[in-house]
Amino acid sequence: MLYYMFNKPRGCVTACSDAVQRTVMDCFPTELAAKLHPVGRLDKDTEGLLILTSDGDLDMRIMQPGKHISKTYFFYAIGEMTEEKKRRLETGIEMAGFTTAAASLSEIRKYRIADLERFMPDDRRERYMKNPDGAAFSASLTIYEGKKHEVKLMLEKVFCRVFYLRRDMIGSLELDRSLRPGEYRALTAEELELLTQSR
Image (cartoon, rainbow, N blue to C red; front, top):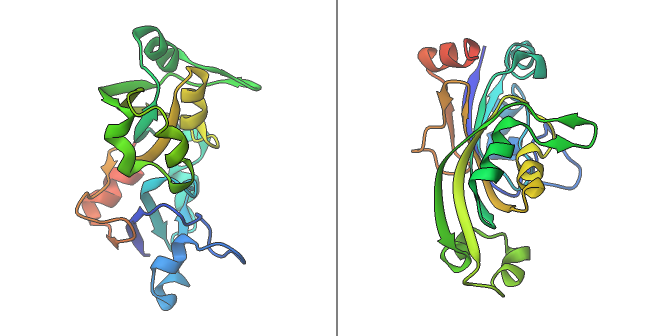
């Protein structure tokens, strides 16, 4: 079986093929890509830890919602983080049809919007920079679900807008920060054990 850690870059979709858009598989040699599939998914504009494998059962073992394996994301957002907003994020946010599970928010650091210009997507930079002295911040959020756009939607519910998002951990497995976006390497035996035994 093949198991790879991939630092997914912005701008490609998590799919084996797409008739229009660049996919994560385009970052791999054709012969290797034909043997792999992504485990779970990351949005097109999200960076970070993605596992690719030839193991057809790995999705079931680690990514199903009922497994409750933690996923930790680092983000930059426009807005202010208060203790009340933090409490809401950590105890559960009401969404359309469900309430998010308990989460953990940490490493909060405050910025001016202008300080984070280099992290902004091209199509939103001009709009955000109209208020260069506005409030922005960074934080890490650990969640135990994997619903579509969950991190961004949770932050929107407390009036903050995420403009940079990177997944840093799945369970106890941490992204190798020596991998630049678009780079990959094989998982070690120890890392595979961390991944499959995560809770």
